[in-house]
Length: 142
Image 1: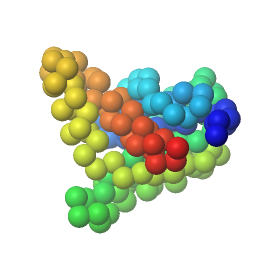
Image 2 (image 1 turned 45 degrees about the vertical axis):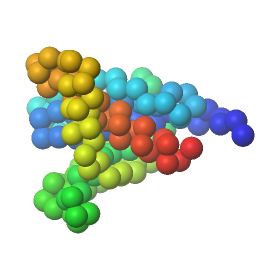
Image 3 (image 1 turned 45 degrees about the horizontal axis):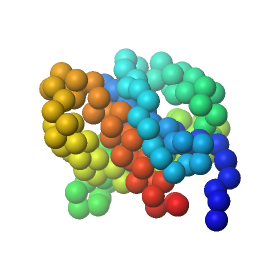
Image 4 (image 1 turned 180 degrees about the horizontal axis):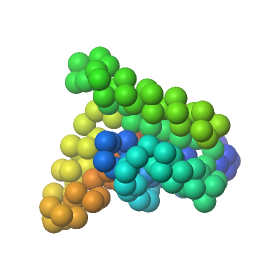
C-alpha cells in the first residue's frame, strides 16, 4: 500500500538551552535532523518553530516526553506538558508526545562511534535526538 503525502512531521527534542528539530520526508518514512534552536527564551523558540512549520509544510508535531526510567513522570515531564500545551495553543497543529528515554544517550553513542569531536557533538546531539524520536514515531506508525 502506497503512502500518500499527508504533510511532513516535525519532531522536537526540547531541552532547557536548546531544541533539536527533525522533519520527515514527504512520505513520512524517513527522519532527518534539520537544526538546533537556541532556547534563549520560550517565546523566541516558539517563533522559530512556527517558521519551521511554514517552511516545511508541517501538519503534525511530535515532541519527546522525558519520562523517568521507571516510566513515571517527574518534574521534567510536567514542565514538558506545559510546553506542549503552549505549542498546541500557539500553532493550532496536531501535537503528540512520545517517550524519549535514552534517545540522547543513543545519539551521543552514535556520534562517538562516528568519531565526531566533543565540540561538534554538543552542537549536534539535540538534532540527532530529535531525529531518533521522529524515526521511532514513523516506524511505529508505518
